[in-house]
Length: 300
Image (cartoon, rainbow, N blue to C red):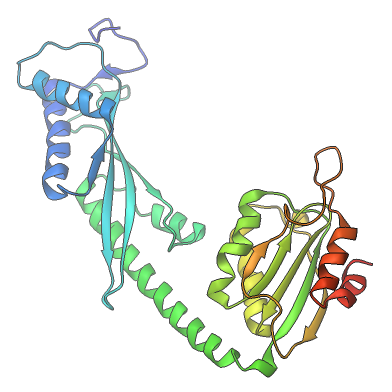
């Protein structure tokens, strides 16, 4: 439907002077970050049309309401660590609230959660992107992200130091955790993903019931489980975070060389949703690895 004076009451194209300002902001962004901006095909077509429209070389035609770009912002700390943030930036070219505005509606910015920031830290960073000035907001986000990156690297260095101390063989333990049920793929993946950073090995067997075996330094295991419960499980109601430590034993050496998931590798799945664990097969698997005594202590 063409945009005209009889356009939809829900939204209307910005006046020409505000269109020019909005197009100018995008062009300036492209000039400042020539290698770090990605524009999808539909948004690029709309931007090209608006550029020609504001220059008077093309009549207005059917358009959507926004132009969206993806901006990669390099984040470099004072310690030489380099990471990046990805910002989804949406530029509105319509307005329904103020027909007499002197500025176009501010661009909307959403931060994609990076691997080096927790969900909580990303949410805190998002609170600082509500400014009216686009480029000032980007700089503010960069400065805050640098502080968070440095804090994260400092924490990692302390953790690495702790892990180096904890690698004394006599300090190792093997801890067994029991879940009445664990099935969510993302939650399961986090057990595997984050174990190496705590120098932990073992396995996760999901289903009803679920079993987690973790080998490593006692404090590292405690820190790992605390991280899982507060970060990975941060969006789960507390009464659903059902996991219990069933057995803890000192060990002189590890049985497992890494942290893996055994859910689809041991036995056959049962139940209406094929989520019932084959505990007989699990017992036999543990016996083969010299861990048969743990089965009765953990699952019986």
